[in-house]
Length: 132
Image 1 (cartoon, rainbow, N blue to C red):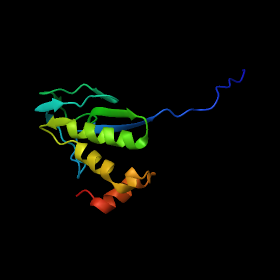
Image 2 (image 1 turned 60 degrees about the vertical axis):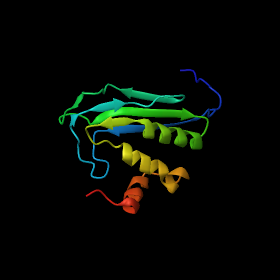
Image 3 (image 1 turned 90 degrees about the horizontal axis):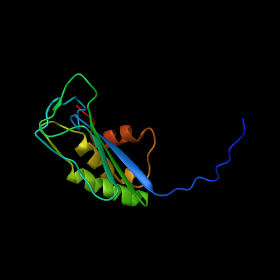
Image 4 (image 1 turned 45 degrees about the vertical axis):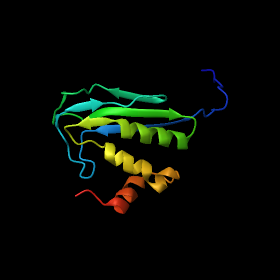
């Protein structure tokens, strides 16, 4: 098979994804139930992949994923700002979601400084209180 040379990888922007789950943001317990209000964010560089809607029901039997919230921006700082704004705009009522947890992570100084690795969440939870 012939080798294909594609050239150097050029970075063009930064993206962040938050998985919005039907879970208690501190205990990580499932939060099945009826969604009484659902207003996803929008705007430049914001994408929401979801099938959720107001009056939709999150059953206790399946994956707790409600939506994938994705933002794209010119650099990491702008992406963090854009995601923070999108999380503030995202309204899901009637059940608990991981939105408050994502807000805290994005506000964390270590996260903002890019000091993340596979142990980040463990350190974050130790610093901010472990789930009960």
